[in-house]
Image 1 (tube, helix red, strand yellow):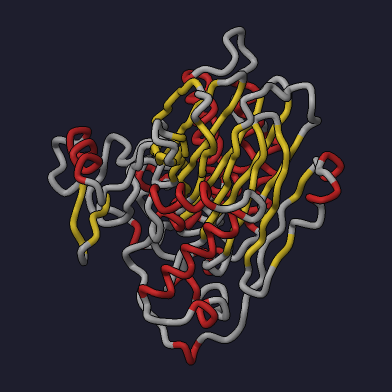
Image 2 (cartoon, rainbow, N blue to C red):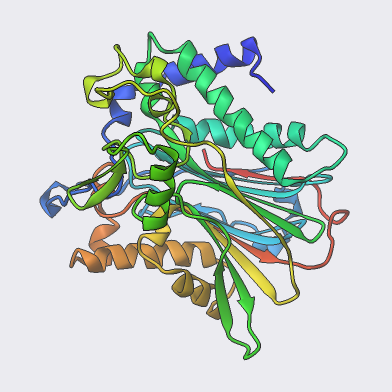
Length: 401
């Protein structure tokens, strides 16, 4: 599943159009610092989804894609083969580093992707655009949807982006420092697969015996802030006592990054990029013979049960401010329409509370400066319909742009 030469040239042209200096204004969480409200000038522009399924949405559900002055956009409620989906995104970085997609069509089923980029949006763009084609190719075998097929699709994304970094090395070396977390859910014929790199998260809401909602995390967080992840990374690099370092109260891999698995971040995976013209602050003083980060996803298959009600797929920007239980309880207690936006707003309100400011003031902060208060936030809520609607809906496609 290598990239065709013509496709690679198109991607090179697209990437070179972007101003790489803007990408490096963003930082990982843990490096964010406060700003003064006197510098907060105006509300920022949002992003818009595209959907091939507008004709599929009942009349009462139309005109539900909108944007407010706070930069939120949302998309409610879109019927797909697995149920109904609610989507919302808010931008904090100068360039939106979160990306997402929803694809639902036979015979693949329903595919949901959340891509939380860091140091720029390029890797998230790439993953968003290549997830479905790679999955379709990987799943074309006789066994259909399997953990091996999903892993193969992830590795194709990694190899494709590495090829792009290599082809643009002389003109845009900073591309080697850009990466993305990657959370993917595939629902087909009553089975759910959740695959993850990084610290985006999928949380299932299910009804317990007492009728209360139970939050069950389906994905594995790959962030070295967790002791078990640090131990995993250290076990993989026993000859490097500095593989994980505590800096200013934040754990990082080689002083550079918090996540231990990602798409991209080629400068921490391939020694060939650990040299000029890469900016000096990203070059490691010592060579390495094996990748310092992994692109192999954790994959969890699950048979959906009648008690399973919904799944929240969200970038780390949401989970930084809301717990699994808080998010699941909110989805359970409120009506479906607008629920993804409600979750985003709840996270923003909590971010404002932590900084002892009013939510209305936070909403007026422009993109670029907003990242000092909260990260980009992407939320997709899938309400599970246990009936098979494979023949009931035409293709659905939604992408952040």
